[in-house]
Amino acid sequence: MITIILNIVFSFGASCFFGLLFNAPKYLLVPAGLVGAVGWGMFQISIFYDYSDIQASFFGGFFVGIMSHYMSRKFFSPAILFIIPGIIPLVPGGTAYQAIRNLVLNNYHEALVTMIQVALISSAIALGLLISDLLSKLYFTYGKQIKLKRN
Image: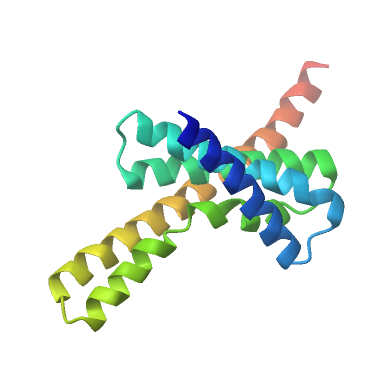
């Protein structure tokens, strides 16, 4: 349990520093860190409940997208300022490194397996972001229209 908490704290820091690296406004660094921490937290919770890495990456990407749209509405900023630092902890960089390392070492079967895993994890993150973007646009567009019709 302490490992999960430390991972969430470090993902918060990584998201904050990547926001700083990408020249996000200073007042948005902590919210961007929170987005990354929530995404990584959902990833860890999904892994804890025995979901695969691909499913956990989908849930992490989905919650990064939802939190990014919430923060963009709250701070009147584009959602991309929260999405980019938020997905940094989810990106399968270590797995991609292992794939290229196996390719260089002529271990082609293992390289192919890890490359497919990297592609599936990356696609799951992108799909989670896409679905969260679609749902948030539906909510903010049609939710307002439904409220106006009731009044």
